[in-house]
Image (cartoon, rainbow, N blue to C red; front, side, top):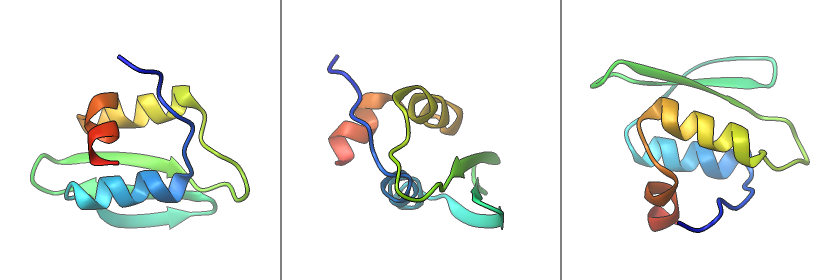
Length: 75
């Protein structure tokens, strides 16, 4: 498996929305997304000017029910 690239939060949000997640709410710089079919919620930090770290990206993908390979194939 290849190493997960660092990505912008907006790109991760686009991926999650393409997979059926909807914006639920935003508090400060954190956006909460909800997938009604599977009743899964995730929060993505939207800190401007920085990429998400590999660890937080992997954690969000895992919490959402996806793997690194799912994201890389979508990309």
